[in-house]
Length: 112
Length: 118
Image (cartoon, rainbow over all chains, first blue to last red; front, side, top):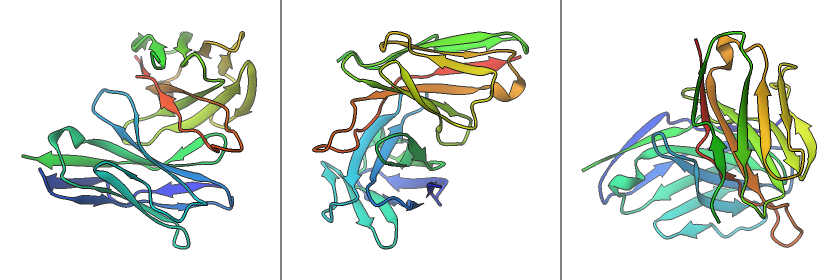
């Protein structure tokens, strides 16, 4: 069975600072993908960043980057220059070619 | 790209009633997924379709739940004889079929239907 663990129920960061959200996972698959999704309050889930497990290079999308440690099965998200609009629930998700398995999420608060 | 559309946004019903939700995926997406999200939890997979074929159902999907995608376009999720424990946000997502070049495709989510059982 595939599992995803997010050990930080809540995190906070000052505007313009950097924050890192943690995620660990477990899978027996050799070919899989990892995602970070953002879910603002009462709004839809939005893809933040995606990482293919076969790629060693860490994915980056503007202010968002990941630290993918395949051997450790770790997939953390770094948000640089945090903005008020980054405040949301962040979900780490693991998938192959079918369904996604999500962690319980981390609530990120951005303080002005 | 008009995004994934779900209706209704909110549904309040009495225990024991039947409810039906609708999902319209992004038009060029062959895959459609249903997830359930309860308060404080991440989404949990329920079922998914490729075109009109239902390819996988979670053990979470009891026999009171049924999903269809009759023409490979929109999908419906019906819950019969609703129970208090069915109260949740029901999320629909869609994606292209994975291919050998691009691999796993990210899923695009709708706003969800929030179900409240009185």
